Length: 426
Image 1 (cartoon, rainbow, N blue to C red):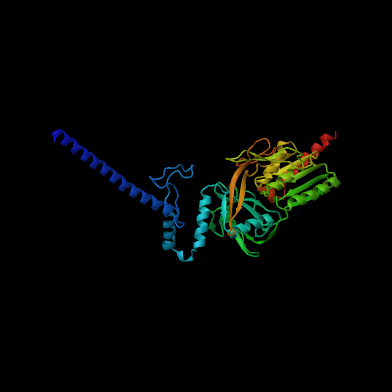
Image 2: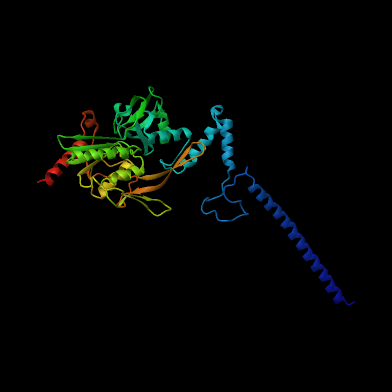
């Protein structure tokens, strides 16, 4: 056998051995990777394990923008355990309180004061508000520049009788600071059984802080009142909330208007914090026969238009809408629509600017999530949110006016309508 053939045989064996070792290595590492993948699959299928984000280095699929980076949910449970173990009053803290608190924090991450989580107790209060019956002081509150603020004291309630005003800032409730409180937390502290009292520390303009003690009562809110002044021939409808009873009460007032045939109508929406959208559209339809009353503008859907639905029996009746800093939400929808269609002249002060849409989601345990899903636009496309509705004629209502039992805004409305009636009949 020649030396060259021996050399070739030697290299063949070395090549076979090399290929065998490569195959063995591939099989070995494939087995490891398969076993690791199988373990991951088993963990993913385990209902006790919660993954947020990608499994680093193994699955690089697109998250669809849901997470900007991987999150370790163990941090949540570590924090949970630290509170349970180390919080000074941990023995008074229940798992349910911690769980609901976590949900409130999750929803609060939106930094939108109108997007809130409500536990079953809060959800019950919310539904009582819409029903128009609850126990408290009778004031609508909101958050303005991170301060709990009185949006509107309701008519003939302990809040109004105690002298609370729209725009009052609430710095403390029963000597406890309101700093950092959500609107719902503040409402829960202010509410209470009939006959008990609550003290609010109020800031009003540049005046010194003052404590106002209010005795709680059962609050039954009739959302609408109307009257006719035969001396001037002016009819007044006051709507305090756009609630479930508003449309029927308004229809009754309109029938009375048909009988009285007034010279003009004052629609008083001052200190009206809002209510049902459908009710606002129905009321506006008494002046607007057809067309858009308000539009919803969301980030993900085309604008949704809410159309007038009536025969507009009040379209030819000279109308003034009174608005102020306490007019919000549904009040702004009605005022904005009547202004845009030229059906009314607005008098007063710029409205609150709560022009956003909330979707209410009931949860199985009786709790609730209210989420801002869109913003309101008037028929002309003007956004209500934050800016509010600027009146055609600005008239202030000062503390001096209030103390002297004067209402310059109402006086201006009557004067305007009488002058309009006079000019129309000359």
